[in-house]
Image (cartoon, rainbow, N blue to C red; front, side, top):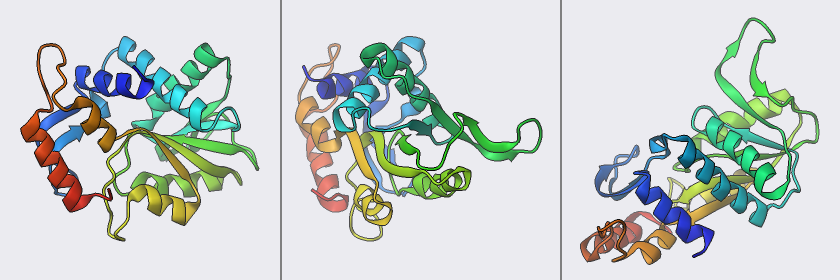
Length: 223
């Protein structure tokens, strides 16, 4: 089993990937939902870091300087990724994250962790991309801290959904900022692996759910 298929089953067992009836932030009715806020234990976070680290190692290698986790969900993701990069591959890289509000006492500022320097190559660690809002909010903060280069981003799932421009958020970010987004898995990977697959005595993605997911992709996604 590849790390991608392991990751899909891990998300299901962790209650992060669910199938049914959901309303997304955009108001769309979706037959599946990904909520990384449902990771709750040390064991889960340890495994999660390994999947992120493997995706990063596979797609970027060690050709970067700093990991950055946008507040708030990106903070633990960047932390466990940095830990796993070291324990799994011996790659020891610094990480940092931002505050939602700048601190006006102590060291001040809105960045925590590694101090960014001009020319640093930063990899953003996030959960999912819907409209690219987090990237558009955090890039100015990174640039305000130092003249960094942001060329790569790692996320859990590519929902493959089109935005207002008619293309996916991942492609929008690539075109607008030159950032290559590397998902651990795509929604197509999820459908292909999970269809009629039994997980702990249940079949979460049966024929009916698959039909609804395929219709959702036809309506809202770039396939």
